[in-house]
Image (cartoon, rainbow, N blue to C red; front, side):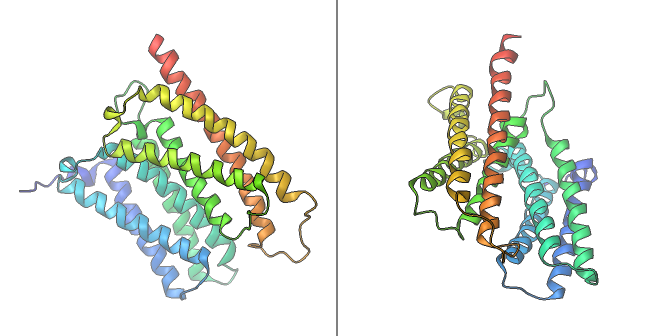
Length: 283
C-alpha cells in the first residue's frame, strides 16, 4: 500500500517542480494554439516542453506516493541528471523558438517564450538545489563531474542533429571528427545509465581512475576535432551571400562552436575529477 508524502510537494524542490509543470504546460499549450509547424526546430521545441512536463509530473507523483524509493534505480542520480537535462533542453527550446517563430506582433508566441525562459530559471534553480554540496554523500550524477557528463552528452546530441544536414563523408578528417563525437557520447551515456541503474559497484576496475583516463582521452580527441573540423569546413568555403539562419554553412559554425564548448567541458571535467580523486583523497 502506497503512503502519501506531502513534504514532497511542500519542500522547496517540490514547489519548484509544481511550478515547472504549470509553466511547461502553459508554454506548449500556447505554442499549440498558434498552429502546428513541420519545421524540425518547432518539433524539437514542442518535444522539449512536453518531455519535461511529463517527466516532472511523473517525478512528483512517484515522490508523493513514496514509490520512488521502491524503484531499482538511484533516484537522486535520476532527478539530478534530469534537472540538468531539462535545463539544457528548455534553454535550446527557448532560444530556437525566440529566433525562428516569434515576431513583434506575435502575442502568444512572445508569451510562450517568456514562460519558457521562466521555466529555464526554475530548472536551473532545481539543479542548484539537487547538486551535491561539498562533503555531502550523494550520487555521482549530482556532483559537478556527473552534471558535466549530462552536459557533454547533450552537446553531442546537438552536434548530431546538425550533422544530419551536413555531408561529411567527402573527407576522412571530418569522418574522424564524427567518430570523436560518437565515441565520447557513448561513453558519457554509458556512465549516466550505469549510475542511474546502480551498476557502478559491479565495475571491474576502480571507477574514478577509469573516469579520469577516459576524460583525458576525450580531451585529446576533442582537441583534434577542434582543429580538424574548422580546417576542412571553412578552408576555401566563405559564407554564401544567400544564407538563411538554418543554412548548411551556419550549421557548420554551430558544430564548430559546440566542439570547442564540449572541449572546455571535458577539460573542466578532467580537472575536477583529478581534484576529487587525488587531492580530496590525500586530505
